Length: 355
Image 1 (cartoon, helix red, strand yellow):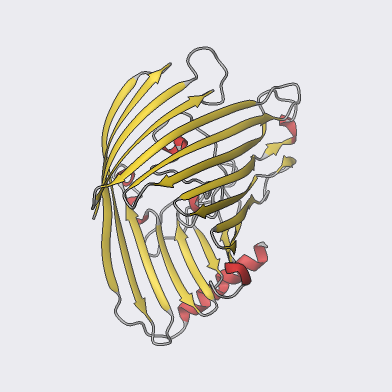
Image 2 (image 1 turned 120 degrees about the vertical axis):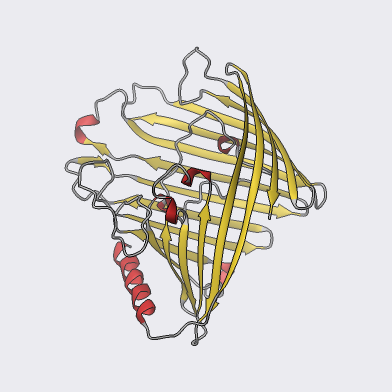
């Protein structure tokens, strides 16, 4: 798989070097501004008022040979405090009759873990909650190259995506800068590569299914009993105004031989997501979602810990703006069964402006 993705990367580089002139492209700017009010109940207290925003710059053009290209970059408040704010969530894509080739800077996640969510606003674990759920590995945490098969190439609407991160580098580079000169061993995964695969298809009207797999190599990792990998599958079915989704995921962390007898060494995280949404009309949608994450340890003598989050969401389209609210409950927050307040309830109000 790694050799295939490396070959695709070489193909992309070769295409970019062809003496094919490009016509002047077009640039579009869009974004959102969102105000939120977050209230915690039960074993956690606090009220948070916040405003966030996101700007998206998208350029597109066509070459003389008919190939099309796109460039996009996203700016959000998290960039302002970082010296690496120049190229956050950036990608360049070249679309050809043979598929789409892309270079991604902290973009292009292929993990299918979240694909089943039908939330009208946001997943319970993605609503500013304190649950700190451990998600699957995702290649969009690193700089990578990606290939997407043509939409009409395979039967049943099947689309395959392949991605390769040659070095797990989270630096957002600009200009002619090279990747970060990271030293092997300075971090758990630095110096190792990652491959990602995803497949999606529509076998019948209303049904979409898919799966993904991500794996890091063990280069330079001596005597590793378990490599770092994650996988997921999902299904979403829509009939009329009702849609339901389900996904199952598993993440296994890299484990050294010497850690196998540790009572705190984690073997895997077993995740599941189940949700349903109903659109009363073009403006009003409600949804319900249940997320579970089970932390499993290497030793059978250590009991698993399940963290559970449930939520009901409502979203109403105001025309150029959306009002949303959600009520979420989180059990065993942080994978802890301690009696010092590990169950948290949360009420969230949000107003999002789109421009």
